Amino acid sequence: MSGVTMDSFKTVLRFLTNQKSTIGYSFMALLTIGSERIFSMVSFQCPCNHGQNFAYGITFLLGPAIVLLALGLFICSRLWRLYTGCCLNPFKLCPRGNFVGCLSALIKILSTACIAPIMWLCVALLNGTFYECAVSGLDENVVVDLFCNNKTPSCRDELARVPCGKTRLSPDENKELLLMLRAQSQILGWSIIIISAVVTLIGTCYKNCRSQVSYLQLSFWKIYVVKEQEKFETFVEEYATKLAERNLKSFFDNKHPEEFPFPNHKAWEEISSMYTFNQSEQYYSTLQRYVERADRDFTPEKRPVLECEDGIEMA
Image 1 (tube, rainbow, N blue to C red):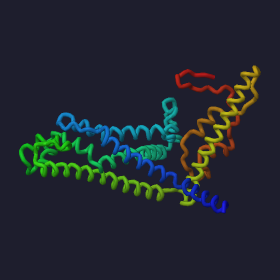
Image 2 (cartoon, rainbow, N blue to C red; image 1 turned 180 degrees about the horizontal axis):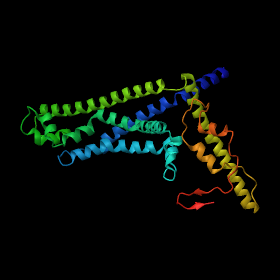
Image 3 (cartoon, helix red, strand yellow; image 1 turned 135 degrees about the vertical axis):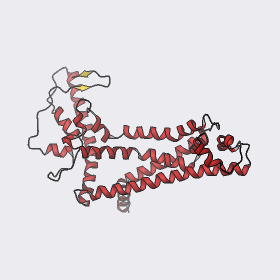
Image 4 (cartoon, rainbow, N blue to C red; image 1 turned 120 degrees about the horizontal axis):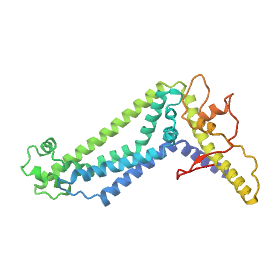
């Protein structure tokens, strides 16, 4: 019985591991919906006047999206692989002069970072609260004529108060204007969802159509990249621990440290670059390409120089 339970647990664990991207996006969607509801119910209070409605509403609509975009870029390791050191060596942005590969990497970075902002915009527009406040404060003739066509003359002056329900218009007219604002917001939200879905589908189809490897090899490649990153983080933590223990032992024992192999600066630079596939090479990452090179430089780093957070170089 315990064996069956353990097998069932392993099956569930394997399923969750394989679907971690889907689970992550689902959690992100739930978090976005919850955050939007909290903003709408707790902190958002439309001022309901022509002078502030637009600025206030658009800030709540676009502000969190911009913050989420910045956070998405900040936690993207692929971006920092491209960006780190590029001011000193601009060619790092496009290794081996592969401009197409560099552009493709930037598109992947931006598309991944835009997932959370797009989710926020879709949820906020489907709810309509922020959009209603922002658009009702516009004094543009096109906007006013769209909403106040065939309405009472006071509609133009009272439009900014519609989101608050404190207008001098009749209840039916106020409700009609509010429904028009909400309908526009939801149409815009669904438009973003449809466009995002179509662009994602077309992009995925184009990427797979132009793939230089088969579907199964591409699947293996994706699994390998994930496993290599997991093992790299584990190995680096163990190696850094051993190096720290060796340095502390040398300090407190007051004697020269033992020999400790350490990759040189050039090796770190090579394995940190973005990998671009080449049909003539059977490699799956820059790390594999480096370790299998015939002219690999095994010279250890004699005096590693690092740049601290405060900008001071130390050896």
